[in-house]
Image (cartoon, rainbow, N blue to C red; front, side):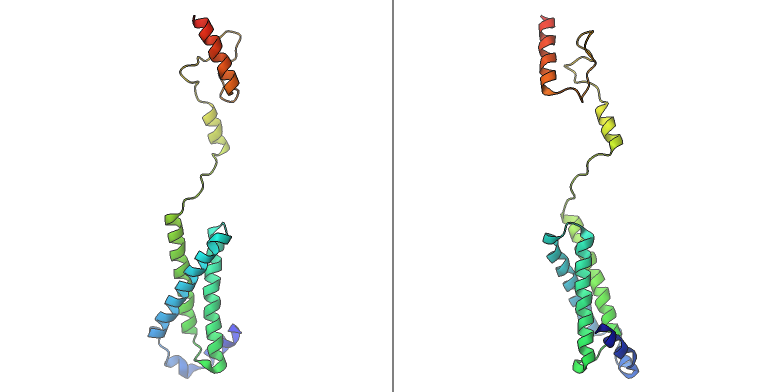
Length: 164
């Protein structure tokens, strides 16, 4: 259907001369497309997890509305114009861009788990100040991976008894 609108636009050179790039109807095409794109992005938030999916939905909705309007104009209800559709696309891109900026500004991303190399570095830390590296000659040095609550309690009890 939108192909009919574009074909009609190309075959109307007289109408193209009367259709300037900057006019009140172009501002309406731009602003309505931007609003539809931003609204479509907002509607997609509860049902999608990724920003690109929201942007795709909002932009597609606005471009489909613009193409539908030009196809409707091609049926004789108005004057189809590729300039109108160009402003629809620009408005859709602007609306999606603003929605993305607002989304990035007001929502926080979940903290990502550390990379394997960062995890290894975190495990190579020194023992807590109240635990020596080895509490007895037969005990292994303190290790955060083996230091469970039970092990820590047993080690603390032995240290307390040795200290007396």
